[in-house]
Length: 515
Image (cartoon, rainbow, N blue to C red; front, side):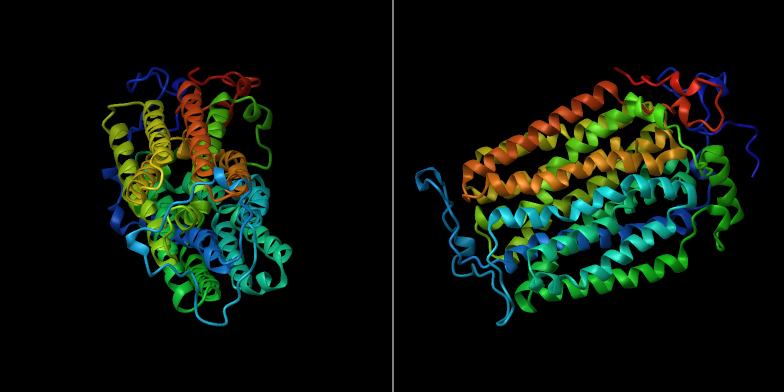
């Protein structure tokens, strides 16, 4: 398809003399999405749908233990409460009176694990998860993300089938198994970025990436109530057998239908192929073996994503891994109610993610805001507003109705950051999008290790004061990350990420953020 020599979105100011967009020095998309084939029938939409289902599986396999933990632990074992005069325990409320059991069918094993032990088990997934982020991103950028994302989910699914056996062998075996699952899943998000760097036209970037990643919210929403139902009806081991088998089935479709690049896809139309390759330009090509590591380490825009990623993930992983425990210990919901109410924030987050991606693309397509402004607005709204509702939750005490409302709103609003810092890697360095996400997600994984453990120690006495501290810490970290990103983030393509650069040019914009 002829494009009249129009530059791509990834051209830089020095490549074109036209001044475009509301922000000086930042080029805007020049190819209309209408020039491509209809999204609902396109190869890239089919890829996004399969990736959406893939991330449903990724998070279903990751979060089911949060609810299963309530059923696995013998709740009749007394917990050490220290100075009981300092412990505030919420009374049972009318909605769960006479229906408070967390037990499954007879004969299902239960374990005497303390709050600290539970925190370590919940965080053990991230011991392995952090190890494959950068390596997975580097290899995905070099060879394509199809194999890495597919095998990552498949390995995790197979290991999930072995979870009941590992639990029966003892805590060390369960921790080792969960760490191995994390090792397999660690490549998933970097591989996603590497795939979209070659498939996503700039004007559809926010929509395609956020739709794919929306599988996180949808998968969590489905997994949590289904897990609660299975625990009570079939016993907690059934959760791991069913979700593990589903992950294996998904991997068969993934390997059969997905291609790493548009030109290797057997069913893509010629018009769609031309649209994708012309709009992405040379930045969609695979990286070489070498990467501009020194320039990356000195890039303030990259560090702003790192700080935002770490901060947002602290509150996210705090709720993801410990919200069922809060629902059980403080709000006193039984496991069926627990599963549904723990999932409620994520079903509300799902439409926010989709709307944020569509709105972000619309603002750029109509040239109402620059890429930098769009990324900052969605990042701030997805971090500051949730922090406000976390603080509000800390002050409502035992009012379970308002607690559920505030936590639901807080989690739902985090979805807007999916169109903010979460896809900023594709703006500043599309050729290295996989490894950049690997770098930032490595730092973002640290909260997954630390947060459940910290929560376990702060809430060892099952007290309201301990949970207040949990919410205060999460809100404070969220606020700091949003402010840092707002001050130093950018949507400009960095010089070290260009396909060709003159000697020393990679250091030219090392600190070229908006600080």
